[in-house]
Image 1: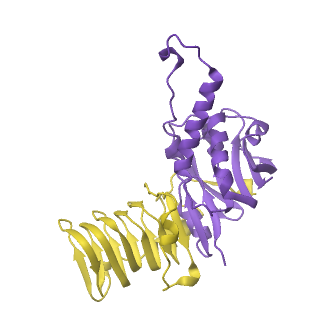
Image 2 (image 1 turned 180 degrees about the vertical axis):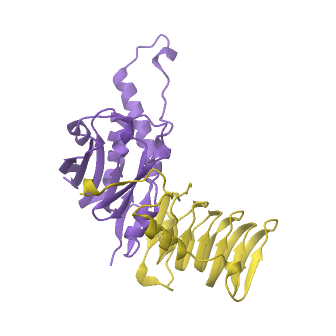
Length: 165
Length: 188
């Protein structure tokens, strides 16, 4: 039973309060957009449409549209606000600000922002849902499997998912 | 080690994800308000001119329609068994038929050790509706305004609600200051 005296009513999710430090720390721990991180990175621009499989050895920022699969097992993937990815995606670190319809496997971490729109299951050792985001679907968290691979198949027959924010 | 299986009938919010995020778990967020937004509708008796209306049959048809609705929402793998069900205030947005249908459809996915938590609205009070909930800490709820203000509310006595929670029994109840009855549930 939760302590009724300690319940916290937040009129606005964004307002400060006892939740603010946690929210701030979770946000600050969010992966930065792939294109802005150091080293090799690529950007798929807002007017670019790709049908097929994407893989590579550098970080990727998607602002355009992708249908197929995205596999960056050792790198970071960012789906920008204008990005529309209808694909199963795998990457070391994934940040989603835009639309993803497909299963999402983050080998190290997945960050879902309040602007995202997701239909699919999420599998990751570490998951952060930004304050203000609302998620509908399944999240499979296994902290002991950082850098490991988690079978998406076990979830595929599960709940159809979608996230609204 | 098998994951902790958690059913949250609401939407995932960051507090709940963070709370469970450091352990092996599967979090299923149903987003149930979406499924309640447009209740199933049967042809009204007036449209069946010349026929004797069997109200009992009509109720049964409506119950079946709700069952069908919830089967599509609770579409889990057959071997799914939840350890914890967070119902929050969802009881209050379902009429008797919907509530009965929901727990019938959920029943195969619970086991004898499954625990539940819910908030029962005993009387009409708009101050306690349209909220979203999360777990801030083991003894602390997070509450914020929700996004389902259009949903009809069905305040009821505890005994009436408890009678429709197939598989669950109320193990403990606390009347909160805001008038909601907070209940812990365990399987019967």
